[in-house]
Length: 282
Image 1 (tube, rainbow, N blue to C red):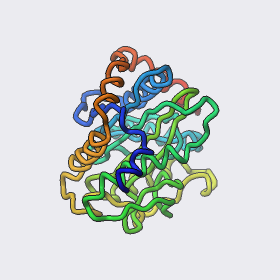
Image 2: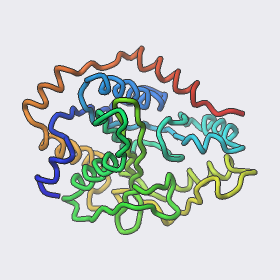
Image 3: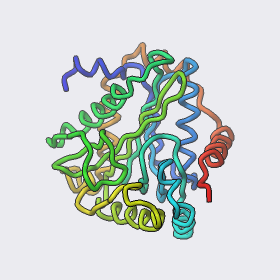
């Protein structure tokens, strides 16, 4: 992707918020609550933001997952094993998070209130991740990977193995495109976790109600590229390099003037709202 094509990604005035080393908050939903508040701010004239984060031990479920007959029991089991759990308000299905998984949120204003061109927003994330991995020499493909967890049209893969899934959350005046990137460790350990969740949560449901997850579907950047054991750090550096190379001095100054970060208390309050709103019903 050449520089001319990158102009269409509208990164000139986007701010970077790197929280990959902020690991003290035990509730995984904290990051989603922060996204929600930042998106509201962006919709009211605030800046576009690229939020990068990790969580040491989280398991996020999709809305459809939360309606499976054994979802509540499966969630309790995960919590008993030390997992922070949550149902997210964006699309997608179950995803395990750990320190080897990098999460990226692109938070940007909608062109208009009735804008439904979400494919363009997915393409922006695909372009960003593809460019960040360009130096590895690996081609990043898009399209659903059979047997992968959280399957979708915008699965990103290398050599047929999914390493990234993309979901979105749209508000009235702004949107969030969220991506999880399996950077370190193995894909098989994550597929095993998700398959065990569905075996419990999906007990008594039609098998078509949840993804059929297989081992040979998902791999990490550590396994698929030459980034090595610190693939997560290398990938975050590459994402930040792509964005900073596109930022302009004027765009950055204007964005920083408009930035108002929510307080810790506001984020905790939003976490509570989201947890209550999307709680699993028994």
